[in-house]
Length: 338
Image 1 (cartoon, one colour):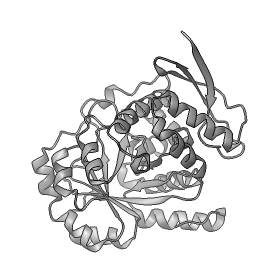
Image 2 (cartoon, helix red, strand yellow):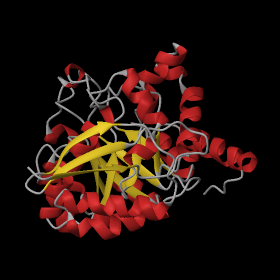
Image 3 (tube, helix red, strand yellow):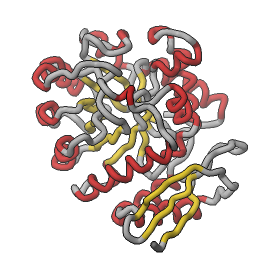
């Protein structure tokens, strides 16, 4: 079978970094058939990077995404991050401080002025039990409307239930699909109403995902996941400008994999905006030994690292502290923030 291989790395890393690239092996019948790790060989010219990404989209059967995504990839830059604040109207989210069932607490988050707020009514932490759409809607009702009335930024709805999305779509600017496009219903609602859509990487469900944490090639398997799901979104007619990707930190990944993703966020730069949700998660505790309620310092360190490396949206429980930390860092580090 006729095949072609080429090297690809989607964004130039910080000077002096030792970074992996990927080798994509494609054939005329199956498109991208294998992705393996390699060693970066020093090419930093973005024109080369762009041409390789455009070729990858063509071979993956995504010609409509080739030009806009490759163009967007070279426009992405460091020090250009937005903060997404987390509001959970749940009784059991892994970090108790994120459970905002009081309007004064919600208003405090709004007043911190994040560019995005992500509200959810179901915990999807490892081992959590699924909540019915009816219960999720009950928890969200009134709170979604309150936020929309008092907040000028973009509202993201964190859910895996189409019924919930349908109920609140008039208030939402974005659907954060934490199922990993398990079915197309949420994406179809986003497409129908012209909303942005977050595609998160995960394997299994919250009840089973800790059984799926082994990867022979972490970034290669994640890339194959994304390109397979992007093919579905493309066939639905969704424009790449409305798609964001989330690596699913803590979802079907062990601490080592989560740390590798945090260290190498450019490995997921395919020309889509990226949403990273590292805030207070367990893998940060593997470094410090701290419980979730004591992991703010680790979270701030992670947020600054993501900011340096150009991650577009940083999803956190403590927006005021994260905004302040990044602004202060920008004062010393030479980047302009917010």
